[in-house]
Amino acid sequence: MTSVQTSPSGLSRLPRGFVDRAVEAALAEDLGLAGDITTDATVSADRLARAVIAARKSGVVSGVEIAEAAFRALDASVTFEVEAADGSRVEAGEVIAIVSGHARAILTAERVALNFMGRMSGIATLTRAYVDAVCGTRAKIVDTRKTTPGLRAFEKYAVRCGGGGNHRTGLFDAILIKDNHIVAAGGVASALKAARDRAGHMVKVEVEVDTLDQLREVLPLRPDAVLLDNMSIEQLREAVAITKGSALLEASGGVNLDTVRGIAETGVDLISVGALTHSSPVLDLGLDFSSPAAA
Image 1 (tube, rainbow, N blue to C red):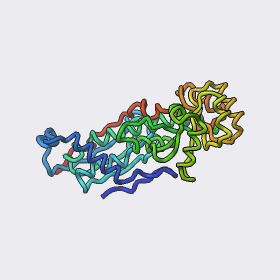
Image 2 (cartoon, rainbow, N blue to C red):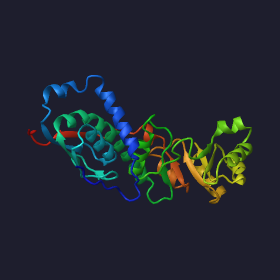
Image 3 (tube, rainbow, N blue to C red):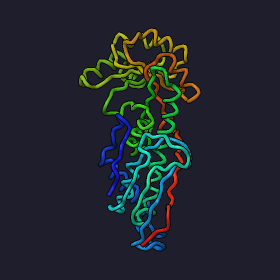
Image 4 (cartoon, rainbow, N blue to C red):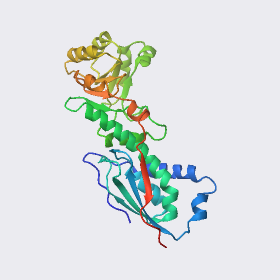
């Protein structure tokens, strides 16, 4: 039996296949060839337990579904009661979920469940800090492709839990023409034309520029978006004035919690922050048995 999970409005769930495959791989890595030799040696197979997952620091929750999947992979009859859904703010000591079932399964899946939740909740927490920092401006905080190999779907989901948005998911769902593409293609005009010819009408095209002169060159070619790479606050303001809303403007490079508000106040539409996924600290979570196990 499992509880019904609720998510904040607009927060899409992770594809079930992604969740099951990730949990299976993580458990296989942890269990190796011999399984959980500590738990198997010390806890009887029929022992039941109830455990509480709680935050040890304040933050934003993400990864509840994958934590549940980790326990249920080892005990299909486990009961998983969600107290704080993905996207919820929690304080230190606040209960996120209660899991009940066979003690062996809870103990064996504990680290896998907490590793996923801690990583994802850390990303959600850092994202919420950036989102709060630009509150009241038009700018939206988005992530990048600087993700952990194999975990991109989970990390980008965590960004959404924190109130941020996703840049392109991968190389397949949008075109981003960067400086090296322009050099290899023989110029921005030829690169953009080739991209338009190749892409369908549903695929967005973004071009990266480093200078305001490059921006002026690109705008007549009508890209959907322009990435303003490592520009100063003054340059960003001028870029907004030059563009006059003809393309989405994305600021990138040198973004941190000290600088993001000033960047947002220039009037750009998007601010991409690689640190959301490559440098977020893990949110400290704990699992503790809430009462003596009973046979």
